[in-house]
Image (cartoon, rainbow, N blue to C red; front, side):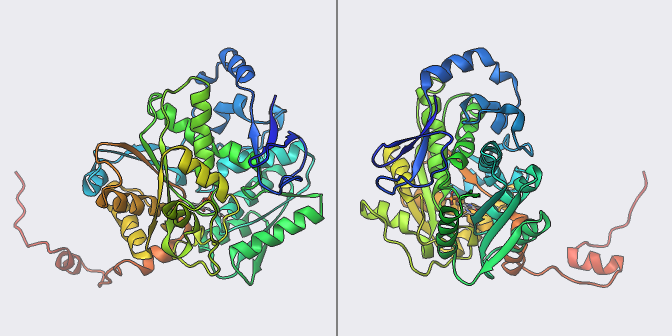
Length: 415
Ligand code: F0G
């Protein structure tokens, strides 16, 4: 019923075969489901009665044994209508899907609950990933939950402190690599090929994408099965944008929604190979050798899932944009101050990108738009503190506080 298929040459692999790249052409794989069978199962399963979460969509997940699910209650995140931010950006109908509400504070948990469940089904005792921070935090948590060993490779000195703290406290083997994310990923790919007993859980693993597609399903349902015109997503290694698109396409193919959104990818200016390819109409991406941005989560120069992302953007009639670090930080503050949503810099790039697209006339003000904010602001408190005005310090006296708050002396009257 479900199988793995190469996105380039269409070679099929059984669902339980551990294979990361097509053995014929070397491209990446995706999971295919049989819509007729799933449609029947959905009709009988009563899925709509379960709470909004990744596992509400269990019938659409490639998992064979529901008793072995490794979960921390992921998904079911808020879709916030943002009128004040919308007004500031000139968008009439703006929503923010706040993925920082997930158990470890990022959307990665959607993929890891499925990925680690699959690892357990396959009998894996060890899992590994390379990460700019959130993937490592999430994998470490789910491996702990499953009681299996976990190793994470991170670029030395280039991940936010909150994420490092998470990976360490969850008990993962944390290895700082003297190099960037792209180099760390190359190493874990080689290690998992060489040592078959270590299961790879970067987003080239198509089971991760299956969990993350629930983000698309949830947006459909939260908008009463009337998808938005556009989804704006930060893009790094490029798994998530294609996962969300897969969610929408599957709901569409199952007849649950009638329209599809335009997928819009945002990258940081110093790490934007996909946005460049979209802008220039190129078939291939040109990897960036030394990616740089304050948004460390998306500091990636050679995104491994680039082809899936480019396909999602082009097939949906979407677009891509780049944003500077200054624009990202400004958007982070706007979202915090206008809506009370504190997200990490990479997440704010979706807001910054939308602002630019509206200003340039590439996005219509009347569109119904969902920006995905991918990770919680407390992941990276250093940047927030460094880039904001310092708090005042005064003596512990009422008068001192009154002075700084500009409170005038008034005669209090009891009536
Ligand atoms: N936003 C955040 C907060 C992320 O952590 C990431 C990716 C992305 C956006 C981009 O998602 O890679 O699917 O395009 N972080 C990965 C990590 C690379 O290792 O945590 P993507």
